[in-house]
Length: 242
Image (cartoon, rainbow, N blue to C red; front, side):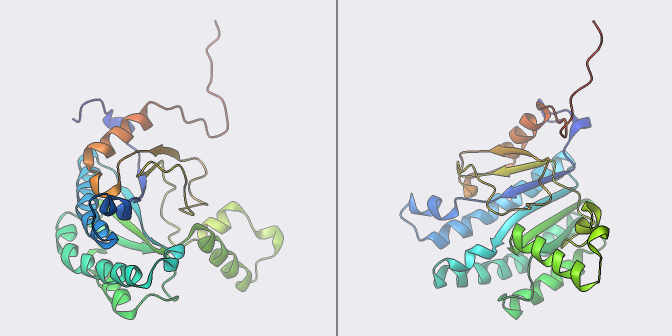
């Protein structure tokens, strides 16, 4: 048992906005790309922490639709880095029982070599059930909603037939539960187009550490904060008569 954490109240799904790689590198006089490379260990340690806690779903923001606006050499590095990360780590994650999934636009700008590695990682880990690691890659929350609406229109739904459930069933990964807890690193207080539909009632925790410095202990502390909150989903807690 991890100190201060109630094992009966573990969040089922945790999301992470992995922010601050470039600023972490700059504070050491390094190229921004070095920060992205350093973030690999943070990701792996967070996965191990999620496994320690018994979290079932972990979704990380790996590359957004807005990240294409970054300098071309940084974008090129990120494409190659994510492709290499999958090659380096998929066997380790598979041995841990981790199922790898991706959400985002696969038919827009992503190099074929990266798509191939994504497909291989998904196929290798398809039968795993200990933890689902979803990588939001070439992902934007608004783009996901737009794509869902386009599919709904294309399927001929009448306006009166469109509901929350219908929209949810057309998202990139319909079986993924809404995140209970979303963590953002680097001291920023934004959600930055991450899981806009799904985080309607998520608990948000913002930490000051840049992503390369994030470790499982930070995840544990975020879960402690989560467990100390009252989740009412728009209602009120019942009060006993006095």
